[in-house]
Length: 338
Image (cartoon, rainbow, N blue to C red):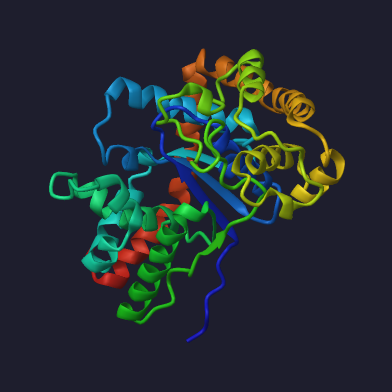
């Protein structure tokens, strides 16, 4: 059997659950922007079907979906270079998701650490969707025959499941139809930590707003949060090894490196020996220069929701030109009539 050649294609998505943060930007969106300039077709998604695995207020879900789309566009994802979509507007996601629910095994789902984290001790009362959503995530990727997915470390297990589902489908039906998608994990700050506790991931669910930089924060708020970020009393080291056991220092240096597009070692060669009293203003100025234009453009777009809706509708049309033939062929392979 001839091994098929797949178009180099990137897919990734973020849940529109509100509160886009610096962690989302440096851990995902910044890389999304870079990849649209590389030799890939790029498709980026507001995964609202995943959002409803837990209850969502309808008005909030609509607003959060538009705000996430605004964040994508304001950060540099161009609707002229990438396909930008809302998941529920492309029905092939859910249709292939059902097929993959029949391919995946219950035991595979039970091993998903994120399900265990989200369900806690309440596994019998969570939604069936929360248990089975990794099959839908696999469909999100493979309905485009995506070859690469930029992911954080916490999503790597789900991409491994996507690969398992593709392998099992191909094996069960004697085809080489779905690609074995590759993860793209890189960057100085793929995991941005809380400004109040360097051992915890920056999160929109943290009760302290001072723990995170929101992508809607204005220049004053960004600078204030960085000035008040938790640090330690020691000077910055001249090499990365000196950040060991200094989580807050490492986090701020990582953020500076990612925003300035330098390595951690390059940053430390410049600032090694300085106290945080000198480093924090540098970081604040850099963050404001990079992030306040994004927050300003997000505000403009949110004042014109019809523009966002037009972008997403056009993206859905473009997406379905890819997904409809792939779903049709999938149905043919498994024996569906019509």
